[in-house]
Length: 149
Ligand code: IDP
Ligand code: MG
Image (tube, rainbow, N blue to C red; front, side, top):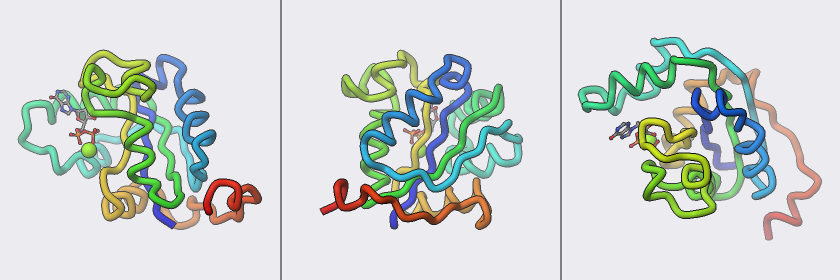
């Protein structure tokens, strides 16, 4: 099943929005595969955001993601990557669609509340970067026939 990494970033944790984000993904029908509340090390932040190295927002981004704990999660489901990106909204909260997390709770790109993998390949890679095999829970969910055709 397709997996995606979701981070409830430090701003959203500080603002008490962990439950809000989880609730939206749960209600949508996505299935939780792993979760941990953690302080992100600089080394992990650099690996996770390596693709942005050299960009003007890279250093502030590392500072942001390591500034306070995050809630890291792996979610799965058919088309989980696209579905979760849609629920989070566009990177810049003032461009995110109403009803998305970033629109509903954010105003600035540098405090945009969540991370979500941007492709199935990156979903696999990022879940593997943040979670080891024992942390990933495989379970059968009784409501699946009522979510997936
Ligand atoms: P994404 O999180 O929607 O995938 P990316 O382009 O991958 O967006 O950027 C990663 C993160 O870097 C964003 O979520 C945001 O926190 C931060 N970021 C991106 N562009 C800017 C910017 O122009 N200014 C400040 N922060 C930025
Ligand atoms: Mg990205």
